[in-house]
Length: 244
Image (cartoon, rainbow, N blue to C red; front, side):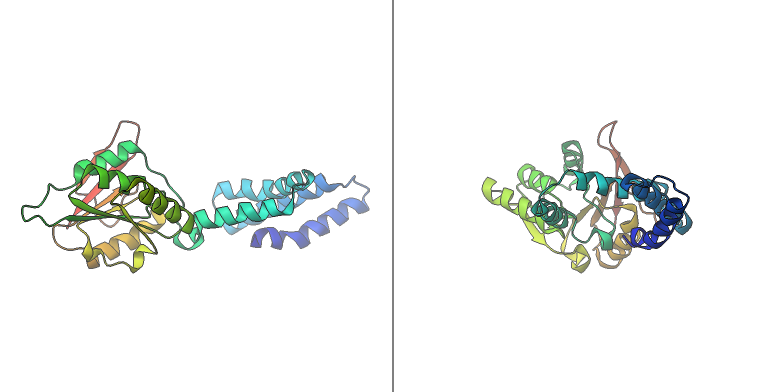
């Protein structure tokens, strides 16, 4: 948005120059000029290549949407849904990544056997999304305590409602996993993003107890190679496993 706003004065100047030489100027022309300026700023700022396409097409998308004459409340509704789904993604750099049932079962297979003393194994999914993994593990292993923590309110509310309606033992918490103490858990599962892995490893090193397990789906940790790499299926990304 800053790039789009910053491109506006230069875009208006270029449009004015086009008008002075009697170049036909209409709204699509203005959108294309503005998109080109925004894409050029994006390139100069060193952002990823795909951002250039987003910045270029954004003014055209706004123009196309405006031409549909949609009711204003619809934009508010879409904004609130996206806000509830992605919440502080801009801060955490962890968008919503849903995992698949094959991954859930692969995680189940990595769970330690029930303890001889009867104490339950405590498992947490950090960034639990819609709660599929947590509910699956709670159903497949009645001997474990399975918790999901989610920062975005809409996925958390959905997963909590599912657990209540299905009578699941799975528990869902609204909050930031960075404020949790990993020492409470025997296994921590993460499906985050590359941007979050270094911080996750520092937290795990500082807090996880001996014999605890950290599992990350798809994203590895640069600071330490995994102790084990597991392929859920031939067409899925691997699970990375670290022992403490």
